[in-house]
Length: 66
Image (tube, rainbow, N blue to C red; front, side, top):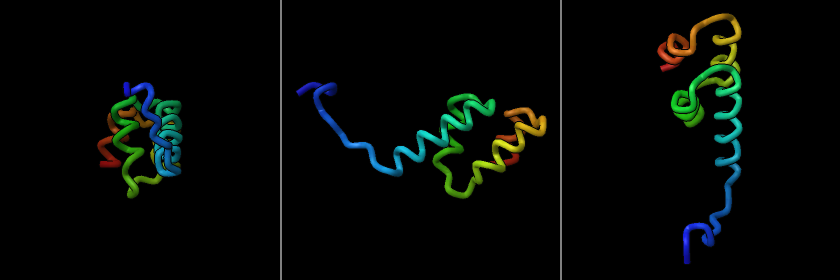
């Protein structure tokens, strides 16, 4: 069986994480940073996006959130 034939069901947690990544990328974070932030339950998504919306550069926002 190839990897393409193997069906691994997506969990609700997977969907939430993917949604968070997409929202963070749309806000201006690069994919790597968005992936890191999306997996962290201590990072408020609205706060992370708000930093960017208020003009904080993504690299600075990432340092604040770490």
